[in-house]
Image (cartoon, rainbow, N blue to C red; front, side, top):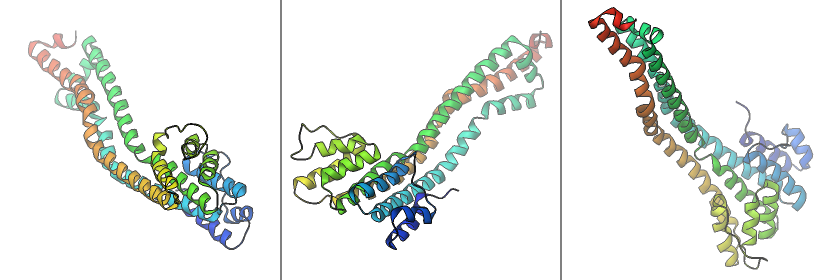
Length: 294
């Protein structure tokens, strides 16, 4: 397993607190700032480095916040994998149900494979069974993929809240922190929250749905003349908990959801390629071998 940010960033933080400049801390820790960030946490690391150079925000505190977010994301992913292990295995086993039908038909009556391979009726049954199996496999794959992604979209919210709080701790203003973090992360939704602050020029626009928790943390605090730092910490912690809860719920629902492609696609495919040829073989055997294979 490759090293995660929750493991590598604390080394950088230790060197930074020992007094090393940022460039030397990254180099001596053997950690590289992502040049082409691929995920939300990668973007957060690159954004933290850029923010520290641009605004003087404490890089160590930002990296620690990202490390905590990475640890929460790793825990949520581990819980998701553990909860999905049973339903995913059941789904894979069910995909072999049509093949099991063919094997059982051949075991009960040796003429069943000949019907499937040598008769037009068998070809039609095989084609229909294959189409249903493919549809069931694709349907099941989408259901499993959706369950695997559940709760994975909160990483950006956790990292964004942590970076805004760190920028505030460095003395930046609330709108300045939001705009700087938004620019560094490539998230215009944070700038939209800054535009909605009291006294901001122009008309406020509603925040993007993914950033609504952060907006609810910032806007009331600013209107009351208070710092939103504590609310931002609560948003990050709540988003991490929600990711774990959503992952667990999705895994629990998966066992029920895979029953739908089973009933609609895989069981009919089992009947078409397993039971139907066996019935034809039995009826053909009763009426005469010529009826089975002409």
